[in-house]
Amino acid sequence: MKISGFSMVRNATKLYYPIKEAIESILPICDEFIIAVGKGDEDDYTRERIESIKSDKIKIIDTVWDEKDFKGGRVNAIQTNIALNECSGDWCFYLQADEVVHEKYLAVIKDRCLELLDDDEVEALVFDYRHFWGDYEHYHKSHGWYKREVRMIKNNLSIKSHNSAQGFRKNGRPVRAAHANAEIFHYGWVRPPHYMQSKKKALDSVHWGKKRAEEYYNQAADEFDYGPLNRLPVYKGTHPKVMEQWISRMDWKYKLQYSGDPDSRRELHKHEKKKTRMITAMEQWLERRFGGKIYLSGHRNYKLLGNK
Image (cartoon, rainbow, N blue to C red; front, side):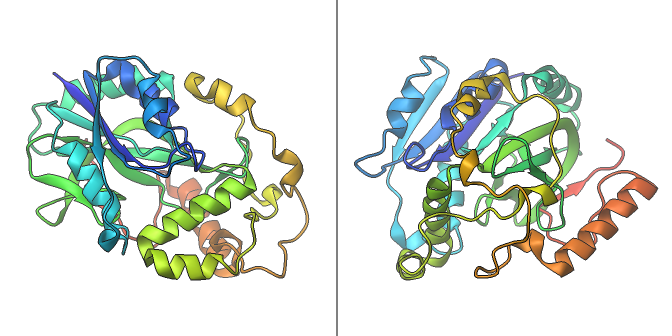
């Protein structure tokens, strides 16, 4: 059995993405890692950051992002599929530039791949998600955040990255997925506030179009407001070892709000809104009552095979 890791990225160092750590987190179980690196701004050194890993498993594909695809996030799927098309493994393990796997899961994931390799019903593996917010201690467990997503797919089954690279589809339909029995640590919303605002602008640019994003952020604050963190659960476990140095550089706690009410001058984040908080409370009650992950509504890119 062969496992291919793959990803896409652009301006990772300029926008505070832990791309090197993401790759390193799964490299031990990958036979190759294919990454499409988009041409970034002059003050970005993403390619050099990836090259510093010094592994012959890594293959970099240099690309240029076309602004005509900066709508609905489809450029993300296009770039993801460029990397996917070069994968030669039986399984293809996708990580975005802010997603990291804890080393405790590597053997579990590899065993799961071996177990299901010849099971034709299974097309993909779905992972639980832990979305950190503001710092490395607080995370989301609310209705507004996806609880699971597909991150491993079997190769050569006409499965492609979907929409804005959130998940994968096979000939337009959701893939049939078994649970990986593992978790993705998502650090996409843990950055110094000024980096977070820049990252959000870049993200909105590929969904709204560059012109609209420029107009919006010309009027926006220079720094992102995470809001009061004491309303979120506290993580008491360990982080992936590859993140140790990255986490040690955190120097923006003094800019975070750990108590009180949200700033009334800004729009509430989705998880702060009353409706979301009510749905979240109901979902969490149902989870405690019946077990498992409960979705009262929301879009999913996969069909979970309950018998797997």
